[in-house]
Length: 136
Image (cartoon, rainbow, N blue to C red; front, side, top):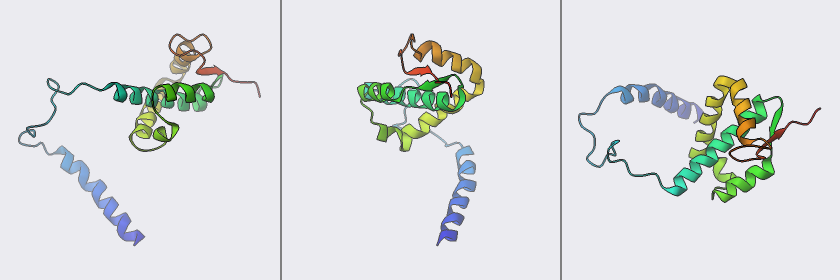
């Protein structure tokens, strides 16, 4: 059973890029184009902001030697955005969060400095979300 499932997954992974490369003749009539894309809702912007913050804190925890997240503050900020920690731990928000983490790792030194500037004790965006790491 496991072998069959693995074989199906492998087949899907191999054929999906090929299918993605074929251009459709015309977009579906209800497809959103840049000109008529529906506006992002406030709730969706808040969910995306929570994913960004989650990705940032994961990055700070793992890549910034002098900084660490204040998880109690993070929990409050995310709750004020209407997002639960469970929402951030699975599905689309988890993928978005990890994508942001990956982007931050491209320039670790600069992004650690930005995290301190924007989210440190005297931060300009959300003060106190990131704090100085305690000496070991």
